[in-house]
Image (cartoon, rainbow, N blue to C red; front, side):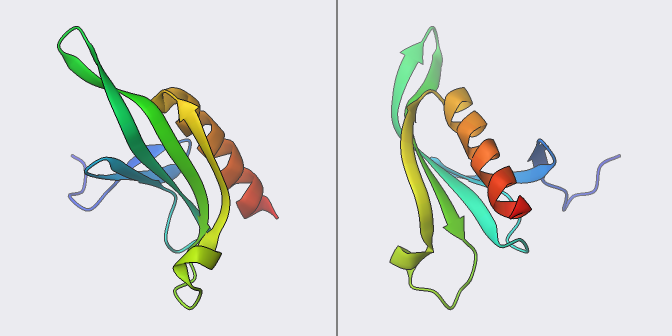
Length: 95
């Protein structure tokens, strides 16, 4: 039986959703990725993410919000955005 406080993970990092925004990574690490669904499209009976904004961000609370953003991009589809976000996060945490 899973613990109530465990998060969904993707490639070994936590993935948390809050409305149209997904946070990928741990706040205990130096960086996280924020994915924001900008547009959706209807596929059969489902709403599917169409355009997604990706931001690699510092987790340091002392920095201004504008200075926390390291990289930013937009991708078509959630899979493409998650794939790029995972690469950015792995590289940032490795350095």
